[in-house]
Image (cartoon, rainbow, N blue to C red; front, side):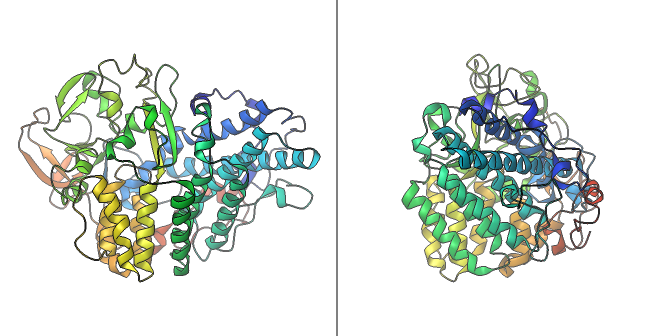
Amino acid sequence: MKKHILSVLALAGLMSLSSCSDFLDVQPEGESTTDNYFSNDQQAIDAIDALYARLQQENVFGREFFWEQGGGQDVVWGRTRGYKSLAQLTYTGDESPLRDTFTQFYNTMARSNWVISALLERQAERELTAVENRSLGEAYFLRALAHYYVAYRYGTKDQGVPFVQYEKVPGGYNFTIPPQQASVVDDYSLIIEDMQEAMKYLPKVEEYDAANLGRAHKAACLGYIAKTYAYWAMWDKTQWQNVINTVNEMEKSYGRGLEPEFADLFSPDTNKFFGAEYVWSIPGYGGETPGGSEFPGVILENKGWGKYNGWGQNKPSLNLYEELAKDGTDNVRLRNSVLEYGQEFQFFGETRRFYSTSDVESGFMCAKYLQPFADAECISKGMVSANGDWPTVRVNFPLLRFADMKLLRAEAYIMTGDASKATKDINDVRTRSKLAALDHTPTMMDIYHERRCEFAFEYADALFDLKRWHLSCPELKAETEKALCTQPRVRNYEDRSNPDSKFTEGYYADNRVETGGDYNGVRLSQYDDHLLVFPYPSEVLTESNGQLKQNAGY
């Protein structure tokens, strides 16, 4: 949906209607007058487009959300950062990525709340137009989406996150702080309720015209319902059956499946953006007025070998490369996910052999989002943003795709004692990438491998996979403990500018190889499950005047 991705946020009034402080501060700065809003379809579209636009911002799915992945074994930071605690798993809650992302999600919830309340008021007065109906569904979806990304990262079975549905407050929402839910299970129930409500108003993806593809749709709601049930299953294993049922519905009633080729998922061909595997994404279009996530430029080699302003901020570890290479050192998924020294690739019309001379060295680079950079005329053709300070490209940047659903369903089968049924879902994902089918009944180690390899450098939250398995899957406890407590490994080359140079393997430590290593500091000697969730920012606790309780262990 090019229009909403590229829209200029002209709604200055709307954007100031509510903020994180409105939502979580017991002393809000004041109420906004909005009685005259939603008098026509365009106002509804503008209000929703302003919500979508927040998702692509730098401190959400642009780059900031991904810094958290430095706490696992598969990502090393290519640029030295000031918040070492993210890599050390010694969180304070006040690290700028954590704090700012938290604020943005609560902004989205508050603004979605306002849109829902306003449209429901209109609905009580008159029949909503088709556009207004769709907009109401989008607002429910976006409220649930923001709630989901806060709930699983901050809520536990003993304490949920703050949330309120404005439309259900007697007499109307009075700008007091929302109640902190008793348990994250309550949050999950509310997220699913909102997604189900959204489905009443939203079309199927194939019912959108070309100008509106990329907006929320029924299958996207079901996708996040399945993810929510999977996270709920950490505390209640009976929820795994709901995962199975939801994914079945996506497949049978909404036509979701896998794309024929792994590389097609990251193609700049817009005809491939919204195929069967698409569930939810941030479509990017590059060009002079770029839209989308800047992440494809964030992972690019810093300064792009003099061709483009890449940022070089996150790089693959040797650990990730070795995991991918377990399926063969020249397999489709590996070659389309990670570049190693000497590997050929196309960059602005040149055939290059990869090497890295900038910033912190790992010996590897993410390859998933390179296709738009291949053509010599990629900027003039609109594939790459002409603005190197916002390095977006023409790609349908995935947040949730059906491969994730198939692997969640496979996990659900294993966790419910029906492991043989997991075979087809896992093998579907593997054979799509020309990998050998499993020759055994699947185990959780297979799920660990497939999720780690399939979603490398995507926003599927591999770090949380490690944390949730450590908490709830005895079979993976030792493996995840190791991954959370051991420094990532890298390759350091004698001559960084020479793809044929000899290398030494060691631990990542601010551009050095060390036998013991330090990953921007000292890793944990033992992982503790209170680290499953992040601590709340201190300023939010202060503003709540005691109504928001900090998570245990912080």
